[in-house]
Length: 173
Image (tube, rainbow, N blue to C red; front, side, top):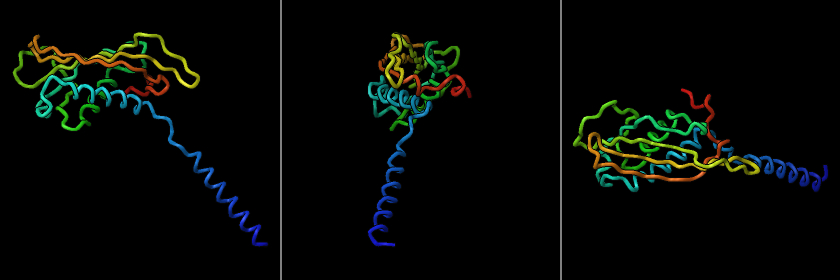
């Protein structure tokens, strides 16, 4: 075999291998990652503007009430609460989080906070060429058990990629 032909074949093989590797990009986020991204950014926003002192965050306990989720969204209240709990617990200097709240709550003097999350779709979906975006409004209501003066709210708006959210079968335990 001639030396120039060997070089051409070697370069051709190398270019073929490199072009094959270039096509191996990151895959689209799965449903769990999409919901986790929403919950992580909500957790950061909540902790940046929380009603308790930042240096005292680890002394606070958040009791999650069942989330309220607009029926038009493919998210169950349980999956939103789970994602919010994970998002809050993954933050540095995070409070304790329990995905449970008692039916009746007597007045508390501790650092317990009841969190009610509401996720609503207040506008029609935006259809793009490659995805469908759903505008949303997320609201957190925090209060201390038995103390109406402790009511505190945080809210955010954005758009969710509906194709990247869990379907009912994916969000079921």
